[in-house]
Length: 327
Image (cartoon, rainbow, N blue to C red):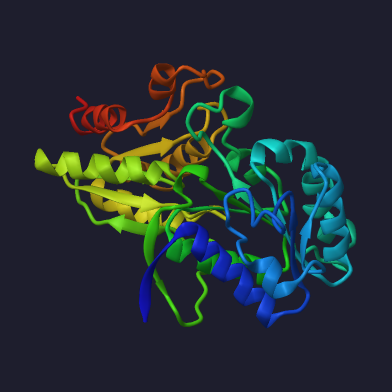
């Protein structure tokens, strides 16, 4: 039976259920215990599981990420929460050089079942150092899996799959959407890593996106429908491994593709999708693929410039009409 809960509650349920199921699972990060989490994702978990399994860390991302990697190599399943992936830059040595390479460097002798999670992307007027989008950064590293979603059902199901996975997983959330509500079953379930979701069926153009830009894509589809244009909206959900086949099947039907990506345009997820779809579905494309990314600059602080920087419905509609009416 499903009930409507928030994204933060879905994440908490997923972590708590896995910690009840498996005693090797524990949570660590800044303010996750006494303060109930910076975004209240871990509210009440200290009371249930105690300080040995819900652990407040010092402000030292490199340090506690390293403890997590060591714990994972020795049979535990850590969940490492970063207050934001912007702060996780300090821990990239552990994520990229240790967690991602444990399996290959040990010739298969050791795995590193660890989940790194926290919010990414812009969250209002947080300026340049707190507003970066990290999916393409982490997905560039062999050995890491990357999840990025906002739907509470998907978030809980993917998080549970990530905790059970033998590989290190990076889970990207949205600080702005922890309060977003959605239907989540009470019964046990998981969502497999590596499958995209078709959020809206359409026949005229395919719009691909992920994380909070799915809202922009979906709003654009509603506006386009008023003009008789039916857009198919695909939510990637998983960035690595990426489900190209779902996109290809959609492009075979619509013959046009627009990708909405909050990251900078150079070497972005949108760039990778563009290359692969032109390779696998070139004969089905009736127009060049268009990417709608954030501006190729650091995010300004002024609210008017924030709006100009990010993808929005107007920009995506212009891109759709450009691929529809190409000559």
